[in-house]
Length: 126
Image (cartoon, rainbow, N blue to C red; front, side, top):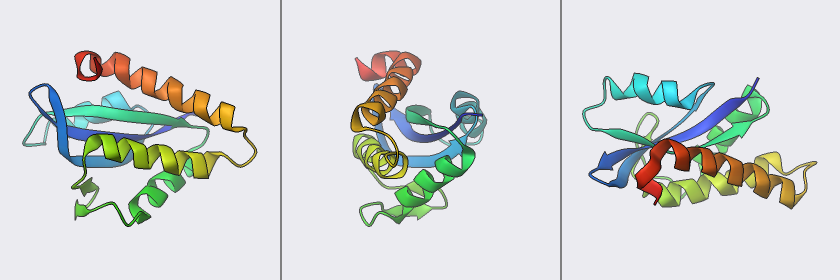
């Protein structure tokens, strides 16, 4: 079963801003709706990346949190520009899923997942 690593960010008008949240879910869009009901500000999905297994997704998430550039706020929330957060996530993906895969395969996976987020967010990525 496919599991996703996702990044959510505060939505400020037509921009995505800090803070961001990193997590793992089988359905990131459903998870966004769940979190949005208790969040004091509007949220949007920055990006989500499909992983072949839940274990792989948890590894990517754990590696993400270990980066020294990531500034924790509270729990799974971080003070980080959403675009920079996506870049860090892509870097982690290339490290975690590259073994046994060629770079073109990894790049294709990343592109497919970014396309999914563009369709979901619409104008946020125009």
